[in-house]
Every structure is written in structure tokens, then in C-alpha cells.
Figure 1 (cartoon, rainbow, N blue to C red):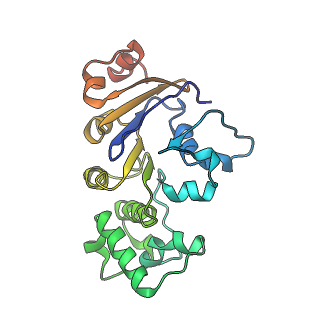
Figure 2: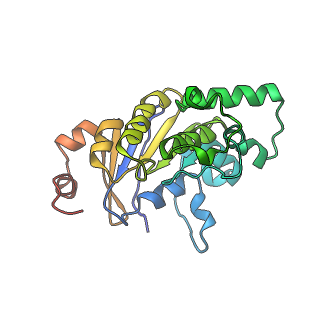
Length: 233
């Protein structure tokens, strides 16, 4: 259960959400774009605003178009080509596009995900043939192809090797020019590297939310200090 969370997330910033296992990080993330509603018995109280609109007053499908999500393990559709993976959201939502528009969206999305140059000659190969890091960037391309305003990343590098992790982290600084990004991470060093602001969750509650540099150098709550210094995990 997640409770007592109040946060203001600035546009075009990267916000990290960190904390020990089971503290509510992923639950919080899923509440933002209403993915938690897919879990039987889940319920929510409170409000989450995207600009002036409470996401719980909007159509859930529209919310998920505006707030895209990338999961912990790369999950490209295994039977689809790289090209079709990128535009899958349009097909799933019954949005018809011309061939020219599809081509443009695919190139633009893969370019923003720093993958275009690696796959432009193999667009019609299956996405499952890519390396783990490339698959995760393909999933990012698939999410941003729908032109969301917010991008949620649930531990997007936890299943990747260090080189792929570094490439995803480098990508975030480029992506925030076009998107507001919220990333759940277990890795404190990653939070320190990639985010402008950081939230620390513990036992389902938001303990502290602050400028990342300040949080790591001058945390205001002793629980945050204990977590950062490794006194509990």
C-alpha cells in the first residue's frame, strides 16, 4: 500500500523514485498511468494531475497514451518486426496511418531512442533478435512513438549489462528535452547520475522529495540518511 504521497513533478525533468524492495515504488508508478487498475481488487484514493486534469477523471486509455511506460525487462512483441514494434500502439488503438506517416514515426522514435543508426537496415527483422540493451531502447521507442507527455520507467536497466545501462542513462538526458521522466530505481548511484529530483519511499510512504544533489549530500530525514549510507536496505 502507498499512502501520504504529495509531489510536484516539473516538466522536462528526470525524477528518480528510490527505496528498498517492497516500499511501494512500482505501485506508485502504476498509479500514475492507472496501470494498477489491471490488478483485481486494486483501488486508489486521491488525485493525480496532468496539467489541470485529474487522470482519474479521464479515459484510462487516453491516460496511457499521454503517460507512456517502459517496464523492468525488455518486452518487444516477439512476433513483430522492429518497424511494427514501434508503431504497435497505433495499431492496438485502431489509429490508421499512411505509409509515409508510419515511416516518419518509426525513424523519429528510433532516433530519439538512439537506436536508428543501429537498426535502420534491419527494420523488418524481429525485435527479439536485438540485444537486451537494444530491445529496451526499442521499448522506449515504442512508448515515445505515441508522443506521450510523461514517460514512466520501472527499473529499466536492472536486467541489462553495464554498457547497456550506461547507454540508457545517457539517453535520459536527451529524452528529457521532449518528455517528463519518472524512473524507479534500486540503484542509488543511478539516481544520483540521471535525475534532477529524487523521491525516497519507505514502507509505502514518501519520506523525502528533494533536489537530487541536496538529498544525497544533506538529507533532511534520518531514514533517508540511513538508506543512503547503507544502514538498512
